[in-house]
Image (cartoon, rainbow, N blue to C red; front, top):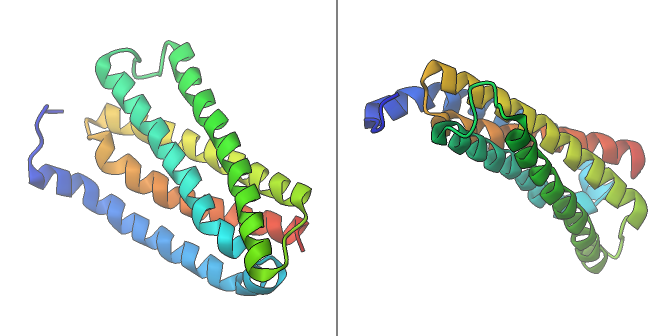
Length: 188
């Protein structure tokens, strides 16, 4: 991969990813529409919580993939992400941030829901649902980010052109699906 890419190269690498991401966005929107009753009537906390929730999992996976890309190009990691210590440190750091971010989001979301709708969710179950969905989504998206970074590195494609859209949109889809499924199962 050349150090300096042309606009044409960036567009050619990004365009197929952007088209795929549009499909995932439509799927996520349809999933939300199917769950409108759950979100508005049975668990209004999801109205407040969902925007922050889906941002956290995708953004954290994006930070993780950026760290991996940087470590690869600086020569601190090889194509198999060795030494494993560096890879695992980055992964566990992202999961630690995820843990605190999802707990905070659940608590603040429930406070706001109680104030706006006078119908807060049970605290313990809500934190459990948000934390479980968030940790699973962040872990899954971090694993996908690992595969995408490795693939793009081996193919000589700039990982920054493909990982960010996939991580953020994939995080939206995976996070939304997990949160809605667990909320339906445990909050209603």
